[in-house]
Length: 366
Image 1 (cartoon, rainbow, N blue to C red):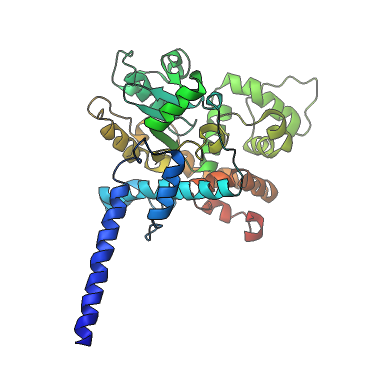
Image 2 (image 1 turned 60 degrees about the vertical axis):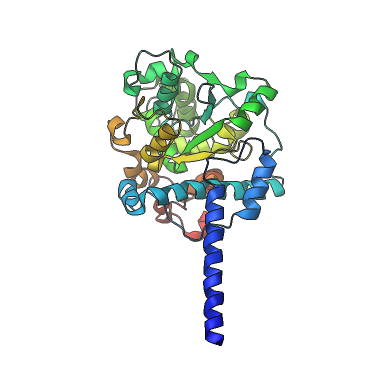
């Protein structure tokens, strides 16, 4: 009788666990909680009713290609990963808020990186070097003012220059209007392994032809950080080395006197992830799958085909070049770089870079 009773108790606990698990999943069945619930209530609800997911799945690109990882996981498991990203970000922002590390509010004028589409009621915060051009192409097509539904038909230069006038940004609204859209619209953000993004920015702006960046940043970087440069010597700024660029990024005067350009600025400075309650965190490492999820959710997947990640590469992938570039950087500068971008790694659950482990001793990582 005692064994029978214990079996009944065990079976009862199992049924209860299943019911609780289903209830937890139902809380996340939509992108976010109903808009009538305040932002603070969202945080409280997720904190009180959602236990931290038990299974942990690494998304580090060093582990294995994302495509093969997704085949193993399946669509349902990958949906779980998206929800885990949101959960972890909320928890970390709550801790930052409790420690008074973040401001209570952000005015609309600081939200200039968030694109608004009223027809589909969606907001997207763009981050340069995170499929930024292709995502802007999608939002340009959604305006209905382009003569194509093929994103690649819109030239990259035009997307950021002549066509930009067709996009609407959240900083063009009053604080009240912006707050209403933030409360009721779906909100998207895409991020990338931070030091990979930094290298991508360097390659794009200083190795490739980019006259503006050569003139605006290259000349000053060479004059300040290259030995043997004569003050009267004419500087083109088109041959900045990666070491010189890292010197510039880690120099205290850079942040204090001019701040970071959007191509290497922190995610928190561009998109304010602890103030904006994002409904989806996409990652560059799984960009094809995350964007397809968005297109299907907005019911525009038949209208727009997002360019595959490999379709737009004309050179060696930045991810394949990390070690060859970062091994040229002295340990003290690597340590400074890690400290600068550590918050981006933490907020978006990127593991400590494996390529840094080869060059930094554990005591240098702190």
